[in-house]
Image (cartoon, rainbow over all chains, first blue to last red; front, side):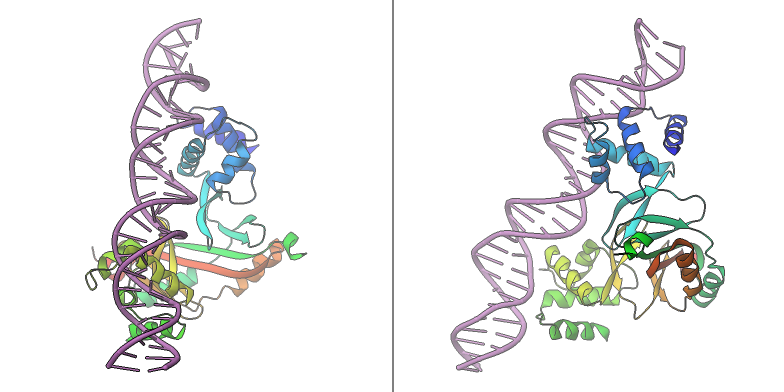
Length: 140
Length: 140
DNA sequence: TCGGTATTGAAAACCATTTTCAATAATTAT
DNA sequence: ATAATTATTGAAAATGGTTTTCAATACCGA
């Protein structure tokens, strides 16, 4: 139950545990797809009706700060969040259902070294994202 | 002079050539860094003082539709645009000055095949972006 | 249990983007 | 060239997402 771990993380960093935060954490931690603040709000309100959208924004902010979630960039927009991957991982997104998968094992060292040499840049970071259709969505 | 080509493209697609559009095209086509609508507005107004911000938005929309520019995703935000790369190209961004470079020659086939097999996804597309410091900025 | 204080939700403010609209200017047909 | 048609324009208003303000509440350490 990672939701508990997230709450522990929040607590250890001096943040209080409230029903509002529990509801948000519960939803985001469980989700296999990237959710926008409003989506989190709608889902979490089923658990905690009094929840305010403002609190969702504030909680997402803290979760991102603790690297428990990360922002997902997509052609349609960049406001959605998912549970963060661990270590150096990349995203694989289903273009149909929005499911998010992490993968690692990319070896871009050869490429980055080549580009660095060719351009004179010092390369510090890279973003790699794959888009496609998950197994379930391929069946339609 | 590619700015002329952009104007031709606009014209060929049924759009009229106006001073406002000429000013926007001039700025965006020349820029080596990604510009936000407001940045384009500020720069283009030096050439055409009467320009309205609304027209900048509308012109960028059309340029994107014609694939002459593309949106740039960055940690700080995703509202900026640059001249589009040709064919299958990826971005290299300077984290200091914002300069944008294109590169090609990435070969991710092996990786995508591997990930496809491992996850069951049908992979259709990929985004790759490198971040670093350009030669000029390394000297500081 | 109590007290200090972080957290809350509502309302207002904010900012980027889009829509509306009447005036203007680019193109087409004459 | 000129006139007629209609896309385009900028200003103002509207919108939508996000942030700030603020008084009331609830968490948590003592």
